[in-house]
Image (cartoon, rainbow, N blue to C red; front, side):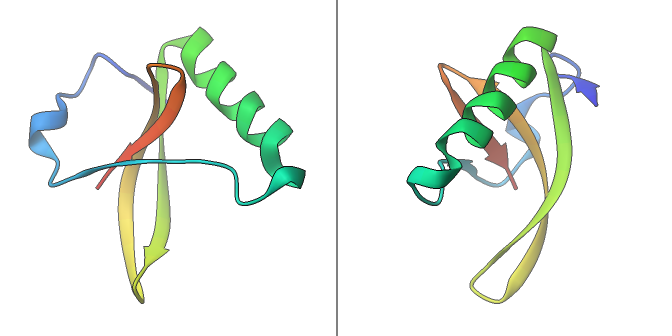
Length: 69
């Protein structure tokens, strides 16, 4: 994990806000958001949107998890 202050979002094309897929994922989403927030870290991940895979940074921001592609 990277310190969330080590990179500037200006270097990313877009910011997307993440949310749980359904009610059964609320606890997992909450644990991820709280862990990122408490640690002040950002994770690196991939996700697929519109049949295209993106490398993203995931960090907690204003009570939500956000990813920058």
